[in-house]
Image (tube, rainbow, N blue to C red; front, side):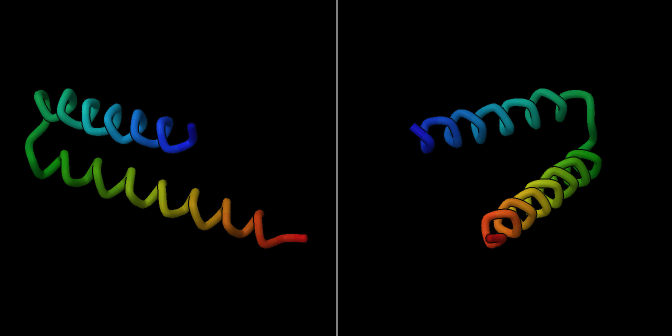
Length: 54
């Protein structure tokens, strides 16, 4: 069930990136991808931090 959710999420992300890419230059698109990657890694580290807490 969890894997289903993450699969849908990645599909949605790629869709939104393609959709935005229509109005954006490749350079801007890369910036957006970098920002979302950064947000994701920040969220992951925060989640693992909470999980490691007693």
